[in-house]
Length: 252
Image (tube, rainbow, N blue to C red; front, side, top):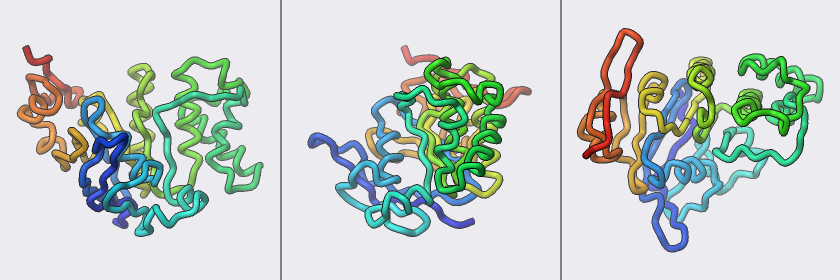
Protein backbone atom coordinates (compact mmCIF):
# COMPACT_ATOMS: atom_id res chain seq x y z
CA UNK A 1 0.00 0.00 0.00
CA UNK A 2 1.21 3.52 -0.77
CA UNK A 3 2.29 5.74 2.09
CA UNK A 4 0.10 8.84 2.29
CA UNK A 5 1.28 10.40 5.56
CA UNK A 6 4.66 10.48 7.28
CA UNK A 7 5.83 12.37 10.33
CA UNK A 8 9.56 12.33 11.00
CA UNK A 9 10.66 13.50 14.47
CA UNK A 10 7.85 16.05 14.33
CA UNK A 11 7.82 18.56 17.19
CA UNK A 12 5.59 21.54 17.95
CA UNK A 13 6.02 24.13 20.69
CA UNK A 14 3.33 26.58 21.76
CA UNK A 15 4.00 29.46 24.15
CA UNK A 16 7.35 27.94 25.03
CA UNK A 17 5.84 24.56 25.89
CA UNK A 18 6.49 21.40 23.86
CA UNK A 19 3.12 19.89 22.89
CA UNK A 20 4.39 17.44 20.28
CA UNK A 21 7.75 15.86 20.95
CA UNK A 22 9.69 14.03 18.24
CA UNK A 23 6.78 12.05 16.79
CA UNK A 24 7.37 9.44 14.08
CA UNK A 25 4.28 8.11 12.30
CA UNK A 26 3.37 6.61 8.95
CA UNK A 27 -0.10 5.94 7.54
CA UNK A 28 -0.75 4.07 4.31
CA UNK A 29 -3.66 3.71 1.93
CA UNK A 30 -6.26 1.22 3.12
CA UNK A 31 -5.79 1.95 6.83
CA UNK A 32 -8.19 3.39 9.38
CA UNK A 33 -5.94 4.62 12.17
CA UNK A 34 -7.33 5.76 15.52
CA UNK A 35 -5.37 8.31 17.55
CA UNK A 36 -6.15 8.02 21.26
CA UNK A 37 -5.06 9.79 24.41
CA UNK A 38 -6.32 11.90 27.30
CA UNK A 39 -7.31 15.53 26.89
CA UNK A 40 -4.27 17.70 26.24
CA UNK A 41 -2.11 14.76 25.15
CA UNK A 42 -1.33 16.31 21.75
CA UNK A 43 -3.77 14.48 19.47
CA UNK A 44 -5.15 17.53 17.69
CA UNK A 45 -1.70 19.08 17.41
CA UNK A 46 -0.47 15.88 15.77
CA UNK A 47 -3.22 16.08 13.14
CA UNK A 48 -2.64 19.78 12.51
CA UNK A 49 1.11 19.25 12.25
CA UNK A 50 0.55 16.52 9.68
CA UNK A 51 -1.43 18.99 7.57
CA UNK A 52 0.95 21.90 8.00
CA UNK A 53 -1.61 23.82 10.08
CA UNK A 54 0.61 23.85 13.17
CA UNK A 55 4.16 25.05 12.51
CA UNK A 56 6.77 22.42 13.20
CA UNK A 57 9.63 23.43 15.46
CA UNK A 58 11.48 20.25 14.54
CA UNK A 59 11.26 17.38 12.08
CA UNK A 60 9.01 17.33 9.04
CA UNK A 61 5.63 16.16 7.74
CA UNK A 62 5.02 14.64 4.32
CA UNK A 63 1.81 14.03 2.39
CA UNK A 64 2.20 11.47 -0.39
CA UNK A 65 5.95 12.03 -0.13
CA UNK A 66 5.74 15.83 -0.45
CA UNK A 67 6.88 18.09 2.38
CA UNK A 68 3.85 20.02 3.64
CA UNK A 69 6.06 23.08 4.18
CA UNK A 70 6.44 23.32 0.38
CA UNK A 71 2.79 22.78 -0.57
CA UNK A 72 0.39 25.41 -1.84
CA UNK A 73 -3.07 25.41 -0.21
CA UNK A 74 -4.59 23.89 -3.36
CA UNK A 75 -2.01 21.12 -3.52
CA UNK A 76 -2.44 20.33 0.16
CA UNK A 77 -6.22 20.15 -0.29
CA UNK A 78 -5.72 17.72 -3.17
CA UNK A 79 -3.67 15.43 -0.94
CA UNK A 80 -5.57 15.57 2.34
CA UNK A 81 -9.01 16.60 3.65
CA UNK A 82 -9.61 17.68 7.23
CA UNK A 83 -12.64 17.59 9.52
CA UNK A 84 -11.74 19.69 12.59
CA UNK A 85 -13.30 19.49 16.04
CA UNK A 86 -14.79 22.96 15.64
CA UNK A 87 -18.20 22.76 13.95
CA UNK A 88 -19.16 26.41 14.02
CA UNK A 89 -20.88 27.61 10.85
CA UNK A 90 -21.48 31.30 10.19
CA UNK A 91 -23.95 31.14 7.32
CA UNK A 92 -27.20 29.21 7.10
CA UNK A 93 -26.51 27.67 3.73
CA UNK A 94 -28.49 24.64 2.64
CA UNK A 95 -26.95 21.35 3.73
CA UNK A 96 -26.16 20.29 0.18
CA UNK A 97 -24.23 23.53 -0.42
CA UNK A 98 -22.08 22.91 2.65
CA UNK A 99 -21.44 19.32 1.56
CA UNK A 100 -20.59 20.51 -1.96
CA UNK A 101 -17.71 22.61 -0.61
CA UNK A 102 -15.68 19.42 -0.55
CA UNK A 103 -16.07 19.22 -4.32
CA UNK A 104 -15.22 22.80 -5.32
CA UNK A 105 -12.64 21.42 -7.75
CA UNK A 106 -15.46 20.06 -9.93
CA UNK A 107 -18.17 21.58 -12.10
CA UNK A 108 -21.13 22.94 -10.06
CA UNK A 109 -23.58 20.26 -11.26
CA UNK A 110 -21.06 17.50 -10.51
CA UNK A 111 -20.32 18.97 -7.07
CA UNK A 112 -24.04 19.11 -6.26
CA UNK A 113 -24.50 15.49 -7.27
CA UNK A 114 -21.52 14.44 -5.15
CA UNK A 115 -22.96 16.38 -2.20
CA UNK A 116 -26.36 14.73 -2.51
CA UNK A 117 -24.77 11.27 -2.64
CA UNK A 118 -22.70 12.05 0.46
CA UNK A 119 -25.75 13.37 2.32
CA UNK A 120 -27.55 10.14 1.50
CA UNK A 121 -24.64 8.14 2.93
CA UNK A 122 -24.79 10.09 6.21
CA UNK A 123 -28.60 9.69 6.29
CA UNK A 124 -29.28 13.39 5.77
CA UNK A 125 -30.73 13.44 2.26
CA UNK A 126 -34.14 14.43 3.61
CA UNK A 127 -32.62 17.66 4.95
CA UNK A 128 -30.55 18.55 1.90
CA UNK A 129 -32.35 21.90 1.41
CA UNK A 130 -32.50 22.88 5.10
CA UNK A 131 -30.20 25.63 6.37
CA UNK A 132 -27.49 24.25 8.61
CA UNK A 133 -28.12 26.86 11.33
CA UNK A 134 -31.63 25.43 11.69
CA UNK A 135 -30.23 21.98 12.48
CA UNK A 136 -29.24 20.26 15.70
CA UNK A 137 -25.56 19.91 16.53
CA UNK A 138 -25.61 16.25 15.55
CA UNK A 139 -27.23 17.02 12.20
CA UNK A 140 -24.63 19.68 11.45
CA UNK A 141 -21.90 17.19 12.34
CA UNK A 142 -23.25 14.76 9.76
CA UNK A 143 -23.41 17.50 7.11
CA UNK A 144 -19.76 18.32 7.75
CA UNK A 145 -18.92 14.62 7.52
CA UNK A 146 -20.66 14.62 4.13
CA UNK A 147 -18.43 17.52 3.08
CA UNK A 148 -15.39 15.42 4.02
CA UNK A 149 -16.72 12.48 2.00
CA UNK A 150 -17.22 14.56 -1.15
CA UNK A 151 -13.51 15.30 -1.43
CA UNK A 152 -11.27 13.26 -3.67
CA UNK A 153 -8.21 13.56 -1.43
CA UNK A 154 -6.51 10.20 -0.77
CA UNK A 155 -6.05 11.03 2.94
CA UNK A 156 -8.95 11.87 5.26
CA UNK A 157 -8.22 13.28 8.72
CA UNK A 158 -11.09 13.69 11.19
CA UNK A 159 -10.71 15.14 14.68
CA UNK A 160 -13.33 13.60 17.00
CA UNK A 161 -15.83 12.87 14.19
CA UNK A 162 -18.30 11.14 16.54
CA UNK A 163 -18.41 13.86 19.22
CA UNK A 164 -21.99 14.94 19.93
CA UNK A 165 -23.57 12.14 17.90
CA UNK A 166 -26.03 9.61 19.29
CA UNK A 167 -24.81 6.03 19.66
CA UNK A 168 -26.23 4.73 16.38
CA UNK A 169 -24.78 7.68 14.46
CA UNK A 170 -21.38 7.10 16.06
CA UNK A 171 -21.32 3.52 14.78
CA UNK A 172 -22.58 4.63 11.37
CA UNK A 173 -19.94 7.36 11.07
CA UNK A 174 -17.10 4.95 11.76
CA UNK A 175 -18.62 2.40 9.38
CA UNK A 176 -18.52 5.05 6.63
CA UNK A 177 -14.91 5.90 7.39
CA UNK A 178 -14.03 2.19 7.33
CA UNK A 179 -15.63 2.00 3.89
CA UNK A 180 -13.42 4.85 2.70
CA UNK A 181 -10.33 3.01 3.95
CA UNK A 182 -11.45 -0.22 2.32
CA UNK A 183 -11.88 1.69 -0.94
CA UNK A 184 -8.20 2.67 -0.82
CA UNK A 185 -8.00 5.91 1.08
CA UNK A 186 -6.09 6.41 4.32
CA UNK A 187 -8.20 7.60 7.24
CA UNK A 188 -6.94 9.03 10.54
CA UNK A 189 -9.37 9.82 13.36
CA UNK A 190 -9.05 10.95 16.95
CA UNK A 191 -11.42 9.25 19.37
CA UNK A 192 -12.15 9.27 23.09
CA UNK A 193 -14.36 6.16 23.16
CA UNK A 194 -11.91 3.28 23.52
CA UNK A 195 -14.56 0.67 22.77
CA UNK A 196 -15.43 2.33 19.45
CA UNK A 197 -11.76 2.64 18.61
CA UNK A 198 -11.11 -1.02 19.35
CA UNK A 199 -14.02 -2.12 17.16
CA UNK A 200 -13.50 0.19 14.21
CA UNK A 201 -9.80 0.85 13.71
CA UNK A 202 -7.15 -1.23 11.99
CA UNK A 203 -4.44 0.39 14.07
CA UNK A 204 -4.32 2.43 17.23
CA UNK A 205 -1.83 5.17 18.05
CA UNK A 206 -1.78 6.29 21.69
CA UNK A 207 -0.44 9.76 22.47
CA UNK A 208 0.54 10.92 25.94
CA UNK A 209 2.34 14.14 26.89
CA UNK A 210 3.09 14.87 23.24
CA UNK A 211 4.68 11.49 22.47
CA UNK A 212 3.48 8.31 20.84
CA UNK A 213 3.61 5.65 23.55
CA UNK A 214 2.02 2.83 21.54
CA UNK A 215 1.33 2.08 17.87
CA UNK A 216 -0.18 -1.20 16.70
CA UNK A 217 -3.18 -3.49 16.97
CA UNK A 218 -5.77 -3.41 19.72
CA UNK A 219 -4.25 -6.23 21.78
CA UNK A 220 -0.78 -4.68 21.87
CA UNK A 221 -1.86 -1.10 22.52
CA UNK A 222 -4.87 -1.14 24.84
CA UNK A 223 -3.35 -3.36 27.49
CA UNK A 224 -4.47 -3.17 31.12
CA UNK A 225 -1.11 -1.60 32.00
CA UNK A 226 -1.50 1.14 29.41
CA UNK A 227 -5.11 1.81 30.43
CA UNK A 228 -3.69 2.41 33.90
CA UNK A 229 -0.65 4.47 32.90
CA UNK A 230 -2.22 6.68 30.21
CA UNK A 231 -5.93 6.84 30.96
CA UNK A 232 -6.02 6.29 34.72
CA UNK A 233 -8.36 3.32 34.37
CA UNK A 234 -8.39 -0.05 36.09
CA UNK A 235 -9.72 -2.71 33.73
CA UNK A 236 -9.32 -4.30 30.33
CA UNK A 237 -10.91 -4.78 26.93
CA UNK A 238 -13.23 -7.78 26.90
CA UNK A 239 -14.48 -9.78 23.94
CA UNK A 240 -18.27 -10.29 23.96
CA UNK A 241 -20.72 -11.79 21.42
CA UNK A 242 -21.49 -8.19 20.38
CA UNK A 243 -17.82 -7.28 19.96
CA UNK A 244 -15.06 -5.73 22.02
CA UNK A 245 -16.08 -3.60 25.00
CA UNK A 246 -14.15 -1.72 27.65
CA UNK A 247 -14.68 -3.10 31.14
CA UNK A 248 -13.00 -0.53 33.34
CA UNK A 249 -13.43 2.01 36.08
CA UNK A 250 -11.60 5.06 37.28
CA UNK A 251 -8.71 4.12 39.52
CA UNK A 252 -9.50 4.69 43.20
